[in-house]
Amino acid sequence: MRIRQVICARGRAGYLHLDLAAIRGGARADGGIFHGDPVTPGFRRIAEAAEILSIMLVLDDGQVAFGDCADVIFAGAAGRDRIFRPADHEADVAEHVAPLLVGRAVDDFRRNAQALDRCTFGGARLHTAIRYGVTQALLHAAALALRVPMARVLGDQYACTPATAPIPLLANCQNNDLMQLDRMILKRVELLPHAYFTSVENELGLRGEKLVAWLAAIARRVRGVGDADYRPRLHIDVYGTIGQMCSGRIGEIADYIEQLRQAAQPYPLLIESPLIAATRAAQIEAFATLRETLRAKGIAVPLIADEWCNTLEDIRAFSAAGAADYVQVKTPDLGGINNSVEAVLYCRSVGMGVCLGGTGNETDHSARICTHVGLATQPDFMLTKPGLGGDEAIMIQSNEMARTLALLSQAA
Image (cartoon, rainbow, N blue to C red; front, side, top):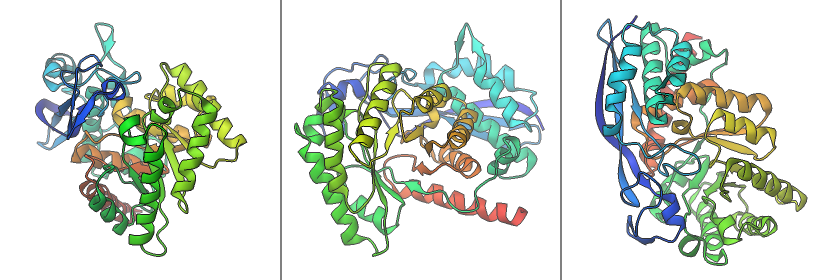
């Protein structure tokens, strides 16, 4: 089966674009917006509505495969591509991508995705969001042509065995919504609440006291609302604010993480991005030093790398340096979804923990496709998406897993 036509449509992303540098620099929050000027190149405001570009591949039998081009909430930060605006890239799709795809046979997803992801025009690669969305469409097309679930396509073409049980989910929640938290607890999500903390003064407290109290309150709420046998892992993403509060002093960062560990008891704690350095090399060095310091002090809190860990090459570098316990495979940052497949399989091969993540800016369709990537590659857990509402994302991903696992079990 071959591609007959490529059609594009602009759409809405699941959340917003936020200028992380401006927020970390002290921009004043006012509800869902921030006052001040943007800092990161490409931003027009500190908080902006995000858009996606849907890529539709019309196959020669009339079926339509599609994928959604999206980038992350904190676009342009820590080595990421500039903020994605569909209007800036539609011409690239028409002039460069469509001629590569029209007439192409779709059965061999792996070969097609590699070819698209690696191509350059004028010496530059396509924006990560374009590579992400087009390769989603190519995976969807292969599944339609082969008449099997996308997870089976990946299992066959990457020689990996798909899961036979659901992958644990990390609920991607707001940090100030008690009703949302209660719903996640009642639904027995395996990890929660993720949340996000980007301001030392407003969210951590100048001495970190606010985050300690908040985490203790989360633990109490889990005990009070959850079933007696419900034992989730608590996960928080702090976007470098702990390092900012401690002025980069590793010993102080470690001691503060111990305070957080105690506040989270009796639940295990994972911390994502406790610090953000200016370069990848500095990030790896700081993470490796912090991880060793935590071990030396007997502080059992795994570290998750996100910022500066954007590509398969980055993930390999973090792994080689022993710089993290887990990495988040942040799917839009890796460009082609084939890279996310390879990244999870690589982490598993070297014994590194891995979260198949992504962003609230994704769509229902990209979330479903990533669910198939998760089932095929079996990461330790997956981040819920799109949006930060929790309920809808859990429904989309849980139901996609249930349907796919039932189909795979019948075909076995």
